[in-house]
Amino acid sequence: MEIPTHIGNLSNLSSLRLRKNKLTGGIPTSMQKLNKSCDLQGEIPEWISTQTVFFLDLSNNLLRGMSSNIFPVFDRQVNLWYADFSSNQFSGEVPTTFPTDIEILSLGCNKFSVALPSNLTKLRNLKRLELHDNDISGELPNILLQISNLQILNLRNNSLQGSVPKTISNLKNLQILDFSSNNLIGEIPREFANLKGMFGAPYLSSLTFVDILLSSRFGFDNISVNELIVYWKKSKQCLPSNNLEMYFLLDLSNNQLSSEILASLGTLKALKTINLSYNKLFGKIPASLSDLQNVEGLDLSHNKLSGPIPTTFTKFQQLTTLDVSNN
Image 1 (tube, one colour):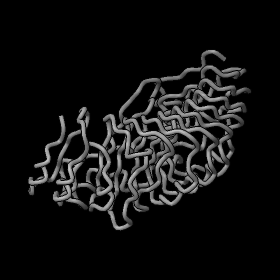
Image 2 (tube, helix red, strand yellow):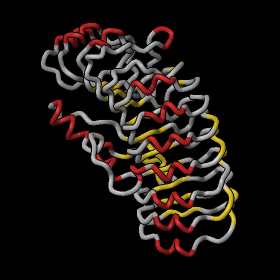
Image 3 (cartoon, rainbow, N blue to C red):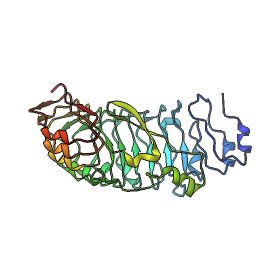
Image 4 (cartoon, rainbow, N blue to C red):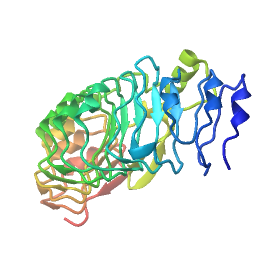
């Protein structure tokens, strides 16, 4: 079934939801007449890059992009604040042809490959970047960690190699970091202790109030940002996007990291879940981890740790999941 061409005659349309379908064909050019912001589904026509649209959701389809997997180059004047192309069939290099003002970009669950492009840094206002479940290879570029406004960075389940750059400390606002299920090696950088966004009370931002923002800035009460999917305490969870200020997560599991666990991780007091499992970490479990009074899940399993479980772990008040098995 195709989107009917006469849909462009719906002059009062303010919200159009067509996701999670198997629509064939493209987006009719008649939609150019819709001077409203809608979540559109279908192929990505070139003309969409010139429209005044702040909210673009093309997720959960079977889209493959334009010829040669080229994304449209969005005009600088386009006020695109949120773009979700997740769960499709896009491939090739991760696109960077979005307006520089974009704040939320979701490209997870596609077939993107090769290394991350260095010009991702031109998207300097990004606060939420999701590239999970692709086949992105190469090393983590230092330049990616110059997007200092990032609060959520999800690169789970790719083919990334090399070590975690020390410039990770540039991400002062980071509250959710997921590098799990890659091929990262080396040590956990000491610079993790400088991730101030994980120190304590969250920094309030537009991500904190996304639904309020959509209503007040753009006048829509019936549009919301898609949930953030993470592995939370050993199970897949959907975190509501209007409540993300409550969640702080660090997941480095399923890599080849080989070092001692940093005692300074105990300074990241806002963390609610830490997963360092399935690595090659060695040495003793630092007693300073007991300073993480908000932690609910701590997974250190499947490493090469030795020594006793610190007696200070009895200080945990919120802990419900502790796994130190297979060490």
